[in-house]
Image (cartoon, rainbow, N blue to C red):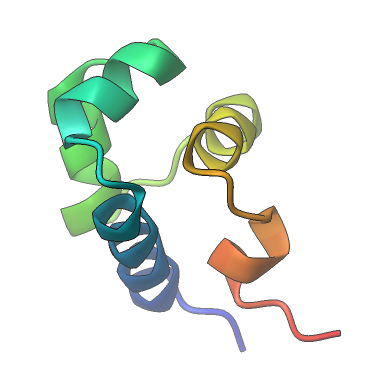
Length: 70
């Protein structure tokens, strides 16, 4: 079963390994840095469009972030 806290953990790891700040990522995606922070720490999940853009900016597959096993 996929859990939001696991997705958030993988998203935080992807951000850390990207060598970009949350502010830089938020600017590239077109969202407020505080909104990105909410996606990482609260019970908030981005729209599918924002999530896809986050994955693109982070150069991570959505399956990897979501924890989908193939």
